[in-house]
Image (tube, rainbow over all chains, first blue to last red; front, side):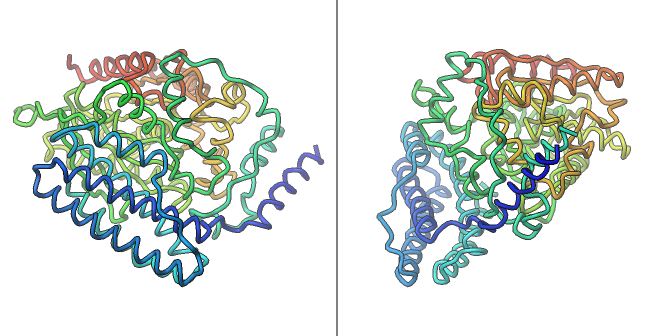
Length: 161
Length: 364
């Protein structure tokens, strides 16, 4: 009985001591942000191929512009932080989402695009906020802080769509 | 005593790592559960259920219980896996256009908003529609209204009802009872505003999945205790309802997918401030005052560490004199309720719940 108590206490202490936080490493943050931007740009291009909706056209073009800029900003901050970013790559879920978008046509593609945008922007905000709050590389941390407000403005626009 | 120690071990770092770091999305996970949990193999899922689990694995999820909340929120969901199966079968994965949505805030925090689902067919109908307030799952830590789109959309279309899918603040940034407070606030807000969306606030039901299945019941209790309009019905799908970590399903489905027993401890590690929270009747619903609650339907999946929660909650509600129907669907897992388009057992569960809600609303 007593030993079990001790074991539990030891396990808890052992865990608490080394890792106070599991912040993304600078390289992991750069790769995650890069994949997120690449997904935004790719999916927005796919919807621009077919959409007849002026509001979606305008939003998708803005996504391409803003996420191209955030990729460039993170890349510049990465080099100041001595992180060499690998070319961004979609993760398996992002690749699947793009495939799903291509499988839809017309208004269904527009609706799928907006649904995807709402989900992916919440994830993007989580990544940027987490690094802006506790990131370890100062230049990247500052870049994340800038990107947080951009992503928040996209989420505001999506609330109305 | 043994139970308490188990909880202590499972909840891990409570009070030791410090409240500050534990409210961060980068806070480390709790220690892994003790070895006995690792041995049991759950029953085999039905072939169509297995196809969704295989699709999930193909998206390369990392085990949630080993991750920080941030990394956990970036993992592929059961909904992602379901859409992949739909696509490979040639089905559309786009949102069903028979239902429109509108996002509206119900509080000042950016997370305090709701997605209002409305059937297109009812757009110009004169009669106010029934209303369902729905709470999504994700253990109060991961997922959001976007991940849980399938069920509120289906309920809106099939019931010809307004469905209010509630987003709420998540842990660990906001810990228990923030989610229960938001759930109650959204219910109150819906009662006040449903008429302006074409809904009938007197014809209202509560529904939810998993952590949201808990919120549906907890909010009905809140309504009873605060003199709010009582819901006509509660639909609680595989709720979190019992803090006993030795329940049969905690052991027989310890290694189930997409939810395992270790993940339950992981969620608790982040949504509680102290171990005492696990015994709060809003979480440990089986020990709440359950008297005088509306007729209730509890839906469970066989292969799910939360199965016993639903079964014991049904027993506790019956003992309190409530009208309860509970069914456990075989060959399916946690999260199945959003898979009705590709999993037969899930479709059956959907149809069962819809029939129960139609009866409650007096519609056909």
